[in-house]
Amino acid sequence: MTTVIHTRGEVGATWLVAAAAMAVVTATTLAGNGAVLAALRRAQRAPAHYPLASLAAADLLVGAFVLPIAAARELFIFQLNWAICSCWSTLDVLCCTASILSLCALGWERWCGITAPLSRAKRARQARLYAILVWPVATVVAMPTAFIPSPRHFHPGEVAKACTVNTNVGYVFFSTSFSFYLPASVMVTLYARILYALASLPTIRHHRGRSPVKPDVPKTSPIKNMKAPRTIVFTSPKGCHLNVPNDKTEPTKITKPSESPQNKTSSSSGGILSRQRRATRTIVMLMSLFLVCWTPFFVMLPVDSLCECVRDATWLWCTWLGYTNSALNPLVYAAASPSVRRALHASLTTSSSTRNTDVQLSPSARRT
Image 1: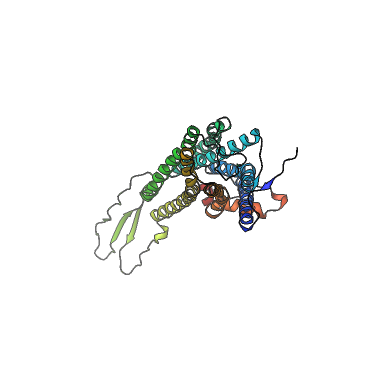
Image 2: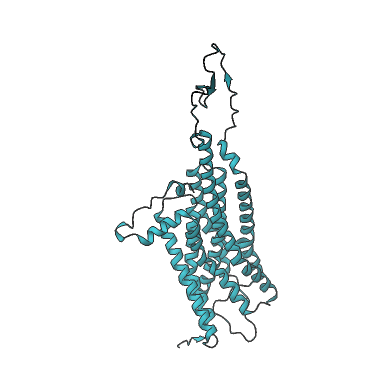
């Protein structure tokens, strides 16, 4: 028996615009996150790259396996068997959970990068471990959706969709708590502490963990001859004595501020502070984008599981706003992360003979 697939509604301007928008989101998600993963593979490893790769992998899975069926069920009327729908709904929940857990891992790495910037090797090992652990935890949250029955999710006058979203009340509150609300609370708390640490960072960086040393008071040598020029003895930071004649007839050598060790330390600390703020700004942008895109869905889902009062158009807009997050994340990487931007540019411009060559990043990009 042949199954006939019909369009959902008339093929008019609205249907065509919706189909085009869904196709653009899907294609952008696949191309953008694929390019980011290739760029991260080429770039020299940095601690933040492991959770970033986890986030890009989750978004790539969304584009490859979740969005095609999600678009088809909105545009066409058809039915799929239980196995396909179970895999689709499980991947949907798994990838969303992996995304926000990866953002939590990024927040932890940024916190360690600010409070312990010299322990880069240890941070890299722990960041890799946490990026790997994201996926088993996300799987535990997502697996029950394949086995817990869901009530019918359509209203009178609406045609049932293939692979409906699980609206079982118990599972909805379990999944939304561990997929969104608890991780989002942890993430917001982490970034609040990061911003507070950045606000007090210059004082810590200026002395590099050592207490400031009071400058020695200049000592004047005894005057042995009234006609001899007065000599002032200064002590250098290393304990050497510097005799500087104080005669109006002899020019005194003035040390430029840029040559002062204290100014060099200030310049170095300013550079480190700038890099830390730039790296943190990238993660804050990712977090803000995630919350803006997914909060409407995670408010709507529990409400609809309790009252079944959310219309199909609201489901469509809230769900696809969340999916759009997977397409926008690579733009944040490319716009705000120097290391990813350099590697991404090299991935797009390199010749086929040099594809396996690592991209050498600048010292400032490697430190972030």
